[in-house]
Length: 138
Image 1 (cartoon, rainbow, N blue to C red):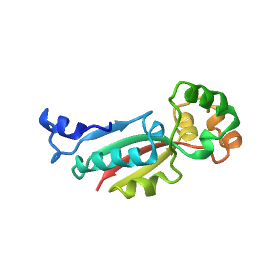
Image 2: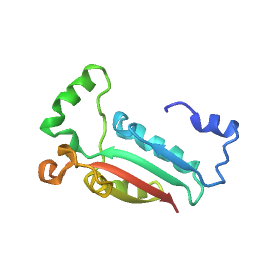
Image 3: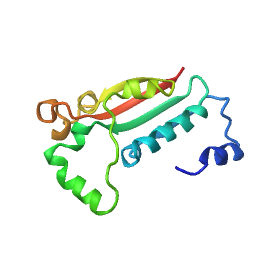
Image 4: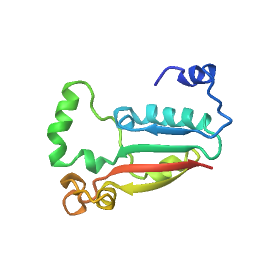
């Protein structure tokens, strides 16, 4: 994602003048804040008004949960550590020209009739969040 992938998309026929949909899931927390901002900048440049973006990210409290420690240690041991977090995804995406709607993981589970994972349950996780974001390019 550090290479010039936008040029490859355009040369393959991608039309940045038409609205598009992007799914960025399970990626951003593995990038530095600077690399994540660069990805969003490139996506934004390729996104006509009306484009949609679905993003998953975490806040620092989620990564710092005691129950996450074993997973974080395994990721670090395989050189796949989480390198970033986002505290306010609406503001973060607004800075790139997106209007975001956030869904809490616990609310999504309840709406689908599924159990809420302990690490996402507000009574257990407190302020820890996995941000599930649906954004529209204005």
